[in-house]
Image (cartoon, rainbow, N blue to C red):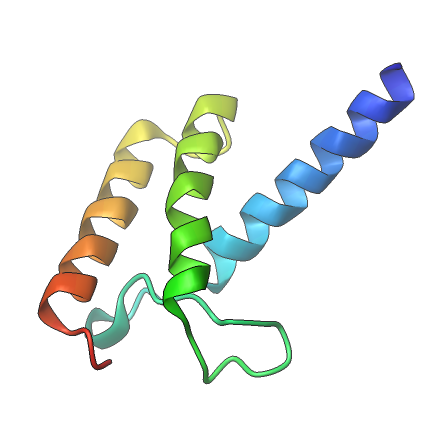
Length: 86
């Protein structure tokens, strides 16, 4: 059972890292996340839909601070509200 938990923890962290590390931090496209690892030019609402809950998981597990999570979530939602065509 311990081995399985380590595998699941590693997978959870790797998944979080993808959504956290690939999200744009540029003002023009803040929070947009690539749709896949092959083409970083294409983002999708689906990726953002997975990325926002990943922020909550990251805070809960202590991978990021609550303040970091709040800023990323808030700024991502602002982007989606004000620049949906980005």
